[in-house]
Amino acid sequence: MLTINRLSHDDAKILLDGARQKSVEIGVPMCISVVDESGNLIAFERMDGGKITSITISNDKAFTAAAARKATHDYNAVCIPGNLAFGIHTEVGGRISTVGGGMPVVVAGEVVGGIGLSSGTPKQDMECAEAGLQNFYKTIV
Image (cartoon, rainbow, N blue to C red; front, side, top):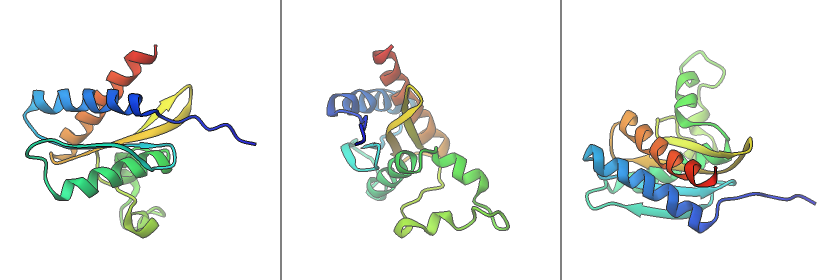
C-alpha cells in the first residue's frame, strides 16, 4: 500500500497567488497551471491578456515538472542534438516541456505537485513560478 502526498486545492491557490503577484509586478499577464504529483491539473488561471497558446504550454510545463520530478529548464540544458536526452520533448505525446517556467513543488524531499507558467519569456515564466513556490513554502514553514 502506498501513501501519496499531494497538493490540495488550497495549496494550489497559494501557488497561483504568488505567481500572479509576481506577474503583476513585472507587467506580464500569465497563464498559470498547478498540478498534483502525477501531473493532473488542480488549478488554472489565465490572467487578462494571457496568451491563448500559453494555456496548453503552462499545463505542459507543470505536468513535466511534477511527473518527471524535474524543472523544465533542467531538460532544456540537456535536450540538445548529440546528447542522450535529445528528443525527450517528443515523449509522452509531446507533453514534456523543455522551456523554462515549469518547476516541481517539493515538500520534505518529495515532489507533491508542479507549477507551470507561460506568456512571458522563459526567464519571466521562471521568475513567476519561483515566486509561486516561495509564496507556498513560506506558508508551510
